[in-house]
Amino acid sequence: MDFRFTQEVEMLRTMVKGFADKEIRPRIEEMEKEERIPQDIIKKMADLGFFGALIPDEYGGSGMGEVGYCVLIEEIARAYYSASTVIGGHESLACSAILINGTAEQCKKWLPSAASGKIIGSFALTEPNAGSDPSGIETTAVKDGSEWIINGHKIFATNGDIANFVIVFTLTDKDKKSKGGITAFIVEADREGFKATKMHGKMGIRASHTAEIVLEEVRVPESNMLGAIGSGYSLAMKVLNSARIGIAAGCVGIAKEALDLAIKYAMERKQFGQPIIKFQSISNMLAEMAVDIATMEAITYKSAWMCDQKIPYERESAIAKLYASEAVDRVVDKAMQIYGGYGYMADYPIERLYRDARINKIWEGTNEIQKLVITHDLKEKGKY
Ligand SMILES: Cc1cc2nc3c(=O)[nH]c(=O)nc-3n(C[C@H](O)[C@H](O)[C@H](O)COP(=O)(O)OP(=O)(O)OC[C@H]3O[C@@H](n4cnc5c(N)ncnc54)[C@H](O)[C@@H]3O)c2cc1C
Image (spheres, rainbow, N blue to C red):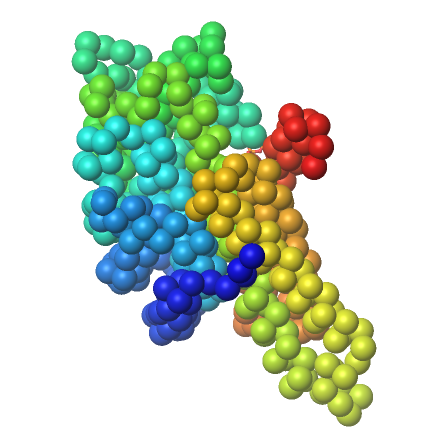
């Protein structure tokens, strides 16, 4: 067993951290206010190869694998979680779908531009009436000669409003639904009848691009079908299984930031004539935060490593997402407690970390759904 990151991954961490400190942190206020990640920041991240970490080098990516990708997400999330969601929606959702089900032609056509960040992707599975249960999607794709006509309504698509291409999940056989009735298509955002509108009013990750997508008589060629007809449901499950590891990595980043801020504050803030870190209840909170971080880090990178080694990791990624999203909530909550009244104020970063962390129990499958994934695996094996 070797728990060390490779030298290459350590160098990546240093580079990403340097970039985030210089280019992202100074502009957090602007991004929170404008509820968007500016194009110049997206371009700089693209130029550094951040959009191609999961894409193999044969398609123009850096092929760093899941461990490298998680380090990238962790460090960007540590600085500003919203910025990491542009990378997550693009790479671990949209590009992964192409990598998993794409033909060689589709991979060659889409992935090199995606790896360089020239084009940005989004993944549209969720609909107003179908969230935890994607077998209930109502968006349809109907064959018309050599084309497919798509009609439907998607919501909560990360990157939807800035995407050049969207992986759209459709119903192609309403009798079969999840058992061979769902099919995915790559849909270019400039196709006639495609309309994405940014959704506002999120509690946290305010600068993350979340969109509603309406598809009205959108025609796509047969060559845009991703995988065989009816393979969409299993594709969505496979994509989400690996994407959950990246969510856990984002939680690690937010939690480390909260702990570092809390340590500093507890050493500086004085009450009763001494720094509050000297009170045992405060130092206990710091210790508990460290325990949570060490645990979430261990399961996150274990599942990332398993993914890279091609060892089945479905249960581990669900555990990582579930544990990390609950642990990060505990960590930011304690950080706010240590900051006292100041932590509750928007002028201090803890307030934002507290709001940003909360999404992780909801997206990429709620935590209730993660428990179903974990017990499904336990039942299948009949043991731990
Ligand atoms: C900011 C944001 C970004 C997102 N990005 C994307 C994206 O890029 N692409 C995309 O496709 N989707 C995206 N989503 C959607 C997200 O994945 C869904 O919101 C999530 O899967 C839950 O679906 P829902 O909101 O419809 O809740 P529901 O499914 O209606 O769930 C409501 C409650 O019921 C519980 N529940 C449901 N079924 C069960 C069950 N069988 N057992 C126990 N409890 C259950 C849930 O856990 C939850 O507590 C995003 C959402 C948000 C908020």
